[in-house]
Length: 119
Image (tube, rainbow, N blue to C red; front, side, top):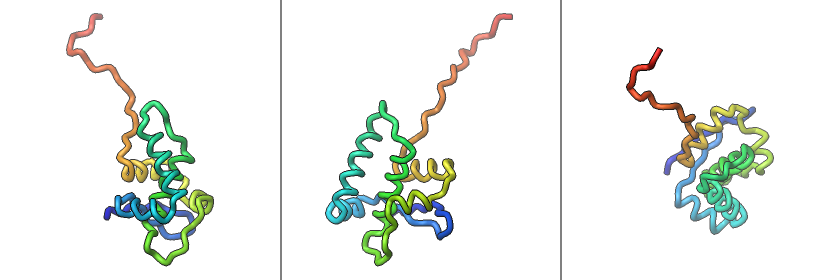
């Protein structure tokens, strides 16, 4: 199982995973979270529709809940998690990319043609 971490304010980093086994257990034990995961994942797959920062935070929260499955630790609520999660958009984006394999869109720059420019 691949485990990632994200920094939390005032506490140790929390573990995250989207292992298929963990998602399977989540689908059986936390049906509301499973439904939300599917809705967000479907939206993410539609390349025409961008997800919001809050939705990205929710998806990271679901990965946190997957990592806690089978643990005795009491999970944070979504609001607690989002409040305590780092404010670093760079770290959030990096962790999100690791979890979901999403690449940021690169700006399209014109490719040089190899022809000499006229002066």
